[in-house]
Image (cartoon, rainbow, N blue to C red):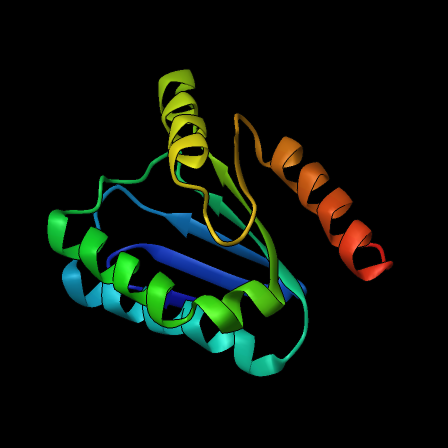
Length: 137
């Protein structure tokens, strides 16, 4: 498990389930470490899913959003091959709606869906994972 300052936790102890939790602030160095950590998961050459708890998350700044877009583009082939699906947890129905609208307008290369609770997100990830791999999550 990696704790990335100020408060981004990336926990792969339940592999192939990766849990990400955001705190209420995100520094540029913390964001870069988070992206570097995510980019290493395809190196394992195993299918995996991620659940991101963004209920307390600060909004990434413009530079951070640009860097994640660059990472997605650069790692697209590897990510599509190994990352089965991503669930994002938001308390706000408005934010969940925004994610849904973004997915409709510009779909992520990996299936992504937003949920109100981690339990809902994990259930969806389990279905997706088993459908792709034939194995339970």
